Image (cartoon, rainbow, N blue to C red; front, side, top):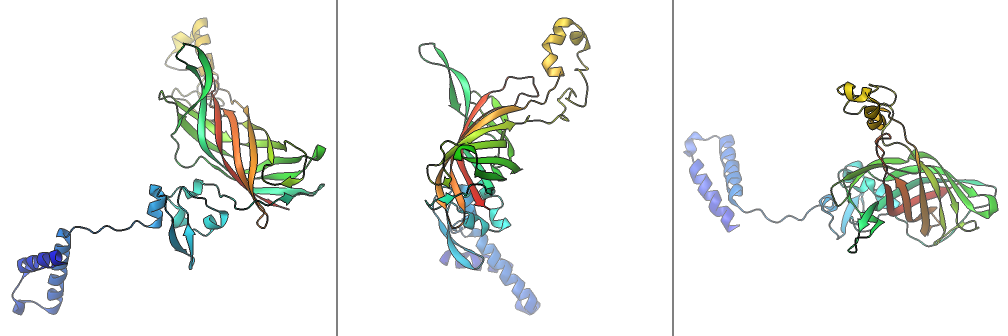
Length: 334
C-alpha cells in the first residue's frame, strides 16, 4: 500500500493543473488517471487460478465450485468425474477444459440383473483410451528381432473418445449376455507418433460390435467380462483425393505428371497400389470388464482392451496393429 501511495503522488504531481481551471468532471478524470498510473508501477499480487484454469493446467487438487446455486467438490483432471458432475456443468465451464472428451466414472459395486426374453438398451456408452501402443519389430542386444508393442505419443487433440454409443443388450443363447452396437458417435480419427517420429493414423471405432459374455449369467456385476469383434472402416472416404488428384470414386486414374513411367509394365506395377484406391474395411477385437455398478442409476463402468489395424492410405500401405487400453461407461435401461 505504501508503494502505491508513493507512485500515486508522483503521478498526480505530474498531472496537476491549477484548480481554478478544472471542472468537477476534469478533477475526477485526473484522479482516475493518477490511480491507473500508480497501479502500473505496483507489482501484481499472486491471484489464485480459477477452477477452469486448474482443469486446463491439470492441477491435482480439487476446489469447491458453485454450479446452479449448489456447491459441490469438483474433481480435477486426475480424479473421477461422475455423470452427475458432468451434467451439472454448463457449456462454458466445459469448453476448453477437455472434460467433453472424458468418460464418466461409476461409483458403486452392486449388480444389475437382466431378465431372459427381454431386450434392454445399453445407452450413453463411452470409451476413453488411456494408452496407445503400436506393434513394431524390435531388435534386442543379441541382435534378435521380435515383434512387440511399443508406447506412442498421442498427436490428436482431446477428441479421441467415443460417446453416445448405444445398442441392444439381452440374455442370448446359452444364457450369455449379448450386446449389439447400433448407433452413436462410434468412430474417432486419431493419430499417434512412434518413438522414431513416424506417425500412425487410424480410426478408433467399435462399429457393428457384437460382444458376448465370457461366462453364462444374467447379471452385470464387478468382474463380468464380455467382448467380440467389430468393423474398422477406412480412415478416408472414397471421395478423398490424394496430392496428385487420384481417388477411389473420383479424380484421375493415374498421376498425370508421370505418364511415361506408368505406361510401362514395370512402372504400372510399381504405382498400381497408389493409382488404384480402395476402401479398406478391416476387423478389430475388444474385451471389456465391468468393475463398478450403480444399481440406482443403472450405470456400469470398467476397463477395456482393444486391438485393431491402422490406416492403409486406401490400400497403398501395409496397416500396423494397434493396442489400446482405457475405461468405459454405459447406462442400462429397458
